[in-house]
Each structure stands twice: as C-alpha cells, then as structure tokens.
Length: 558
Ligand SMILES: Nc1ncnc2c1ncn2[C@@H]1O[C@H](COP(=O)(O)OP(=O)(O)OP(=O)(O)O)[C@@H](O)[C@H]1O
Ligand SMILES: O=c1[nH]c(=O)c2[nH+]cn([C@@H]3O[C@H](COP(=O)(O)O)[C@@H](O)[C@H]3O)c2[nH]1
Ligand SMILES: NC(=O)CC[C@H](N)C(=O)O
Ligand SMILES: [Mg+2]
Image (cartoon, rainbow, N blue to C red; front, side):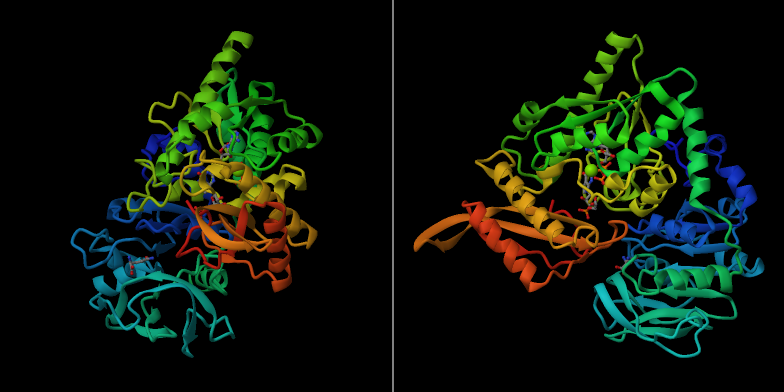
C-alpha cells in the first residue's frame, strides 16, 4: 500500500520496509536487476520508469536526496537521475550524497542524468551550470550529434528532434567529459565520460515526442549497462490481482467510480476479477458531461461490459455549487469533493440495502493525474510542483472515508490500454478519447453556469467530434475537444453585426498525456468544421484552433 492507501506495483522507496513487503516489490526486486531512478521532482520521472518497463527492465524510484545507505540497499545495476523544477545553484536544492559517484565507480554502475540530473552531475563533479547561450529551451528542438559518441553509437540520424524543458545549462564540463550533442542555439545537450560511464542529457529522452528517445534509453540500459530485458505487463497485471486480493480481504465490498473512460473501465474489469459481486459500480452524471454522454455510456455498459452499474443524477447540486466560481483550482476542488459526496451517499444506501457498507473506492487514477496534482506526502515525489488538481487526486477532500484501490496509479494510459487488452476489454472502450472527470467544468473557462455556456459547448463539441469521425481521424488523434472562451467577438452574419461567443478547438497527438503536440488538420477539415459550428450554433461567430504543444501548455485549458 502506498501512503494514501492505494496499491502500487513499483515501490517508491519512501514506504517503510514492512509496507514494501506487502506490495510484493521486494520479491520482484529479488528476481530482477534494479534500475534505480532518483527523483528530483520532474513531471516526467515516472515516465522514465515507464520507459524502463517498456524496455523490459525492473525499476525502483527513490527521492532524489535518498541516503547512500538507502541507495546501496537495493544494489542498483544502473542509476538514472531525473529532471526537476529546482536550479542546482539554489541553496538547499536536492542532490545525490557526496560519495555517490565514488560508489558507482567502485561498483561499475553506469549513471545517466536527465536535465536537472545532468546539471547535478556537471556541478557536483566540478563543472559549471549557468544561464548559458540559449537562455531556456522549451518544447521541440533539433539537436546535432557529434561523431564518436558512445551514447549515440546505435543511431544514424544525427539531427533528431528532441523535447526540451530547461532554463539552466552546462557552461563548463567537469574533467573527463566531452560534449556529444548541441542544440540549434548551441547549448550543450548531451555529455559523456566514457571511462567512468557517466552520461548526461539536457533534454528528455523519456517523453514520447523525443525522436529516438526510447532507443537511446534502451541502448544505455541494454548495451552500455548490459541489463537483460525480462520484465512484462503480464507480470504487472498478475501482481495487481494479488495485491487487490490482499488489500480487500475475503468479505469486504468496494464501489467503483466508473466513467465510461478507458481507465475506470479497465480498473473495474480488473477488480471485478477479484471481487466479483462484491464490486458495485457507480456512474455520476454531474451535469458537465458531453452531449448525450450519460445515455451513451449507460448503453455501452449494458451492451459490452456486463457489469451492474448505477447511474446517479447529481446535476442540480453540482451546478449550484459551481455557480459564480471562476478560479480553475477552486472549480476542480469543488467537483472532486462532490464526486466523493455521491460515493458516500451511494455507500450508505448500499449498507441499507445489503447490510454491507463498502469501505473501498476503486478509481482509474493514472500517474499523470497524480504527478500534476502534486504528490501526496510519502509518495516519494516530494520535489514536484502542482500543475493542476485532478479531481480524483488533488481534488479529493481531506476526510475521504474510503481506502482507495487504484491499480494504475503508477502507470500511463497506453500501459492501461495494454492491460485492458490482456483482460479482453472491448475496443469500444479502449479506443475512446480521454475525457476528464471534471468534464465541461474545465473546458468552460470561468463560470460554468453563466448563460447558455454549457449548451453551446456541448453542441460545438458534438459537431467537432462528429466531423473528426466523418473524416476518419478519430483513431489517429489522441484527444480532441472544444473549449468555451469567456469573451465575445464582433462578427457579421446576414449583414448584421453580431457580438457573440468564441470557441476554441483542440486536438493533440500523444501516447500518455505527459507531452503532446497539436494535430495538423488539413485546411479543408478546419474550414468545414468552422463553417458547421457557426451555422449550426448561432450564438458562436468565431472559431479558433489551438496550436500549442504540452509543454509549454497543458492539454486542457484549465
Ligand atoms: N462521471 C464519472 N462517474 C464516476 N466516476 C468518474 C466519472 N468521471 C471520472 N470518474 C472517476 O475518476 C477517474 C479519473 O477520471 P479520468 O477521466 O482520468 O479516467 P477515465 O474516465 O476512467 O478514463 P479517460 O481518461 O479515458 O477518460 C476515473 O477513472 C473514474 O474512477
Ligand atoms: O480525470 C481527470 N481529472 C482531471 O481533473 C483532469 N484534468 C486533466 N485531465 C486529463 O488528463 C490528461 C492530461 O491533461 P492536462 O495536460 O490538461 O493536464 C488529459 O487527457 C486531460 O483530459 C483530467 N482527467
Ligand atoms: N526539466 C528540468 O529538469 C529543468 C532543470 C532546471 N530546473 C532548469 O530549468 O534548467
Ligand atoms: Mg474520463
């Protein structure tokens, strides 16, 4: 169990030893060579662990300032230092113990530093980190690889596009290191000391948008460090089934927050395998759903899922609570708290009906929800910043009266899709675009309840998604949706001046939601959809398309 009561496969190292035993992580560790990831608070640290799993190796994650004793206790074969929001020259910023590099040297442990991790290597081994030539690089960037590098010896492409997110730079390298790649602006973006097998990347090889990023990590782990690839998703699934059985015991009941989205559908199917009739699914219609979503989802459950699901209508209460609220974080917290109110009432009703009060709550929480919401105490990611409070994590009330079962809390969407396929979940669910729990609540900027905002957005979104399906693009796009902007613009319709709503359209390519790029629609598609929206939704006179990647934006607008 992790600190908040959910089960985890990959121990974060902050859990006490007795709890670690419970997760089964120590037995897994006994059977596999360990890649230790030291976390300095990057949004992407779990993504490093996810890539390591994809490559077929076992990983553990410790906080970046873990003691030497702790590092030694897992006998790592490789250590990766993550990125992070801190700056190495700020007093008190997290770092490895002074004798860390000596220990790695003595035990022939290769080290890779990523972004902040590379800056830490440079500073701690006697180089200099400063503001450099680039003055910060964010998003996509081509880099130029120098010949003769060990880190890149597997590849031919000498100018891949990589994903950057940094302000500081290495301006002087420690002795023994050489530059093996530079950015377009001339910043040092890859370094290596071949003799000591210490490597550094200023960009993020772990994000899906970095070309050959996984290949670079694979080459580092399998060829340079010599690990064997012997870890699989089937093993993750088996471990989760075992953990849930232990966590819930033979008689307790659980409720499952089921949205019709991929994550909760796979979570429900998995937990149902263990609990059977002791699992009770509840779908909340909070009034912030898409056009006809409530009916459509219930029909999908009946036709394809064969799990009993109760639909709860909570529209009026939710919209009353959101009236006049404009701050995005405040909205998220209200929505999160209302979800829990519904679950509590549902559990109380169950007790009256069945004589059993479910004390567990199953949610399809994924790692991106956790990291963006800012990690709960004890989760190990103590150096990260809050980006937004996802309703199912940071939006939960403090006095949550359930123990959480969140089998995917350390996984990413594409991994959950893989587990769903292993469990035989129908493709209708697996291929659905993600839809956030707070729904239209975070897609209407500002007050959700004002005027006809909800109706307008639902209509626009429906027209947009239908056009995407009609053009055969739905499966190519990771997520698409419309956004209501709280401004009006001047237009001319039927020779008359209008002063009407503006809507934004967003479509992104991604594999895990951690990084994303905007989808390049054809002008024909954009022309068609814009004309349809302005003709069919008379109170809209302007449509804009969002051409921002994540980072620097996020996928949702709030
Ligand atoms: N309308 C809803 N009713 C009940 N539970 C919900 C609802 N919306 C979200 N949840 C709960 O919150 C969790 C997080 O929501 P999220 O949208 O991230 O996941 P999802 O809906 O299962 O999948 P997807 O990301 O594909 O939409 C869900 O897994 C589910 O447990
Ligand atoms: O269930 C959810 N509750 C939330 O509060 C929430 N906020 C964002 N999202 C979804 O997460 C993914 C990443 O989105 P962002 O780049 O906007 O953070 C995208 O798929 C978003 O739709 C949420 N899902
Ligand atoms: N993504 C990172 O690791 C950033 C490191 C450091 N905070 C910088 O801005 O340079
Ligand atoms: Mg959803």
